[in-house]
Length: 167
Image 1: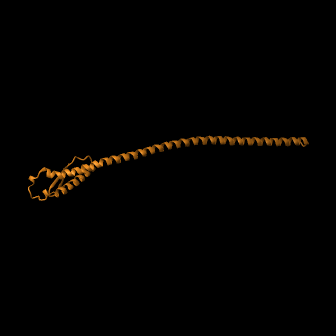
Image 2: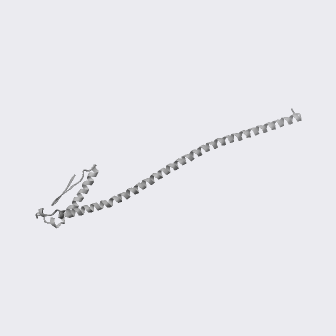
Image 3: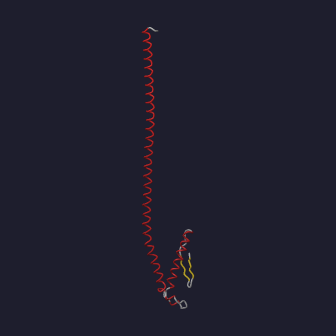
C-alpha cells in the first residue's frame, strides 16, 4: 500500500497489504505518524529550508542520514518490545497454567466430596434400616412381654378363683 503525506514536499511510504480491516486502520495510522515525523525532521534540515534552490546537486547521504536515524530508533523500539512481549506472554502462560491446575484441583476435590457424600448416604440408609429393624424388634419384644404378663395375670386369677371355689 502507498501512504502519502502532502505538504510543501510530498512524502510517500510503502507498506505491505494488511490482512484485515482493523490491521489496515492501524497500518494507516502508523504510516501517517511515520510520515509526519519524517516531514518534521526534513523540515528542520538546512538543505531543504529554501525550496527555491536547485535540489539536484544534493547528495543522497545528506538526505538519507535523518531517515537512517529514524529507522534505527524504530528498530531499537522494536527490539525492546519483543522481549517485553515475550515476558508478558510467559507471565500469561504461567497464570493460565495456575488457573488450569486450580480448576483440576477443584474437580478432584469435588469428586472426593461426591464420593464421601455417596458413602455417607449409603451408610445412613443402612443405619436407617438397622434402626427400624431394632425398633420393630423392641416393639415385638415389648408386645410379647405384655402378652405374657397378661396371660400370667389372667391364668393366676383363674387359678386363684378355682382354688377358692368361686368357679
